[in-house]
Length: 142
Image 1 (cartoon, one colour):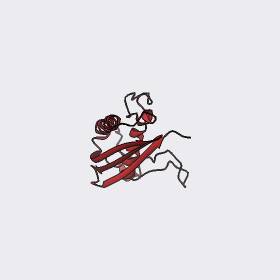
Image 2: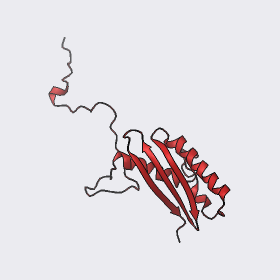
Image 3: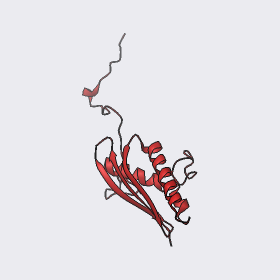
Image 4: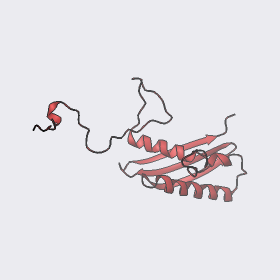
């Protein structure tokens, strides 16, 4: 009676590297010079995730209807200290809920002028320890 033996990796079979294979895609989605999906460094990928969170309105994503913080919904709302405080709290809560395991918020400032919302965010990327200060602006296209 013969038994089949596993030839193992020495027989020329490709083995998968240990652990999950991870690719961080660039945002917005684009094709690189090689004709492949463009990738981003991890810290840049995290910045892209923050941008997506800030400028996605709740209800926009089918599988995550509560994802986002709705900043652009308030572009034409009258400026007031109460609105600024509400926006700041809303953004802080969304960042903590959706990206709290990736970043630690150091400082956050939300302001609105005319038809533009501006978010200044200083944070630390937990995995790499990189400190970042990014400015995000969004508004209604003219």
